[in-house]
Image (cartoon, rainbow, N blue to C red):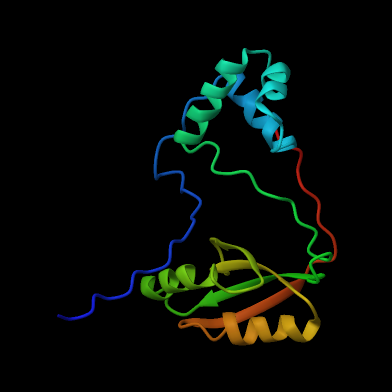
Length: 171
């Protein structure tokens, strides 16, 4: 009996606006989301108090927000320098011919590359922006050359070091 082909890795993809209609959120849902963006570890009792609803209501609302895909997860904000990866960069990649197979293969593979924080398929002259971190300039160079520009269809890469970053207030 022939061996079935291997399954492609799961890729977490941010849904495109056309994938599904935006869920309707009321003021309570928005308040829950804002509070969790500020502190994702907040216990339900504190979340309910801040939002001004009963704990059971808050728990049910939170469950519904997860089921509807509004809240996709709670994540740690990690200090990459403390992890020994102080260098961050954005790598702009351009593909030849915009061959769908090359773009899809890249999307599936890039999430498995150590040092890749996120990848964004964008419009304009650049096809992908890849946010990476590395332990040194040499490691960054190797990541770009060995893991990104060597992928099928990639014809140009431009690496920009990140000196500082800020995050927008949530809400």
